[in-house]
Image 1 (spheres, chains in turn yellow, red):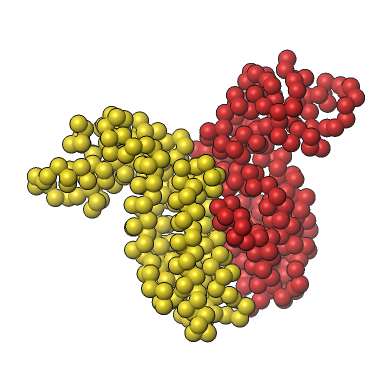
Image 2 (tube, chains in turn yellow, green):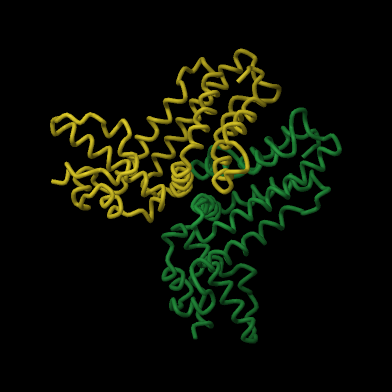
Length: 218
Length: 218
């Protein structure tokens, strides 16, 4: 089928996931490349038009495929979206160490992630829009976002709990409230930043906010 | 035309804006009632399906009108949305006093607004989704949201500036950072709350956050 189609139109077609190795490979590798190219294209289309308005046809066109060819790799638009999100999350997780005893490292990681996000406004916009859309229980990514927020809060909570144990939280700061506030701050700063990127630096603001909660040097 | 059509299907058709007075009135009053009924229906449809997916046909059906009849009152879907937002903002503003010297009153008003919003999750969802969608410069509500955030920040900044003048901000808190953080906190808490309303109380969390920035009793 269209699995060998050109991916020249796909945004990020040159990224590591789509492979830079030009030597002949088996069909599994080819299929993985195609999937990666579809995910890049889907991310670009969803970031541009939103999930509800972004069409499979647009995505298929970017990878020079038919819609049927695309659906050979991903059963539905919803499954495609979830695959896009999973792939992005792997990237994001690289910034945040998951050592529950390294509170300072986790908080620094969140700031690094905010700085990285600032380099990709289209993706930030997609996440903001999706997170809001997906608060509706009927949205295909609802369960994904519910789980995602639980997971993020667990990571952030472990960081504040470890700082709390070592008496490194400022007076009045509890791990519970600090966790919800930190996650809220990350989301809320993104909205304001997307509306006016000249207003402030997301990484600087998040750093200052987090530094206000701990006596440890971030 | 359809101006006298039943509004029985419109959510909130019994609200004060649509009038409970049953006596005959002039065509101006009738037209104002119809506009109000359309705005209620539009708010319900947009809150349910989002702006991009919510259709004029659905809105027209709720007020038992044709699309053409609806477009007699509002030129386009985009204008209809802006009218919906303006109407909601008038309601929201009632909670927040605009006296720039009354910092405590403004911050208390924000908490009251958060508590009111908690009674209308559909509307909160619409605003969250729209604010995120509208970060795109091509979105019809982009300028509206840019202006809205400038206006909200001005109000909040005046509150913190007045507290600052009276030495009522805690150490390290500046009006600039406190303003961005407060607006971000309001937006961010909404997302988490929409995803799991049992998790926390938006009013309580916002109150605790704001109390952490001022020595005045909120």
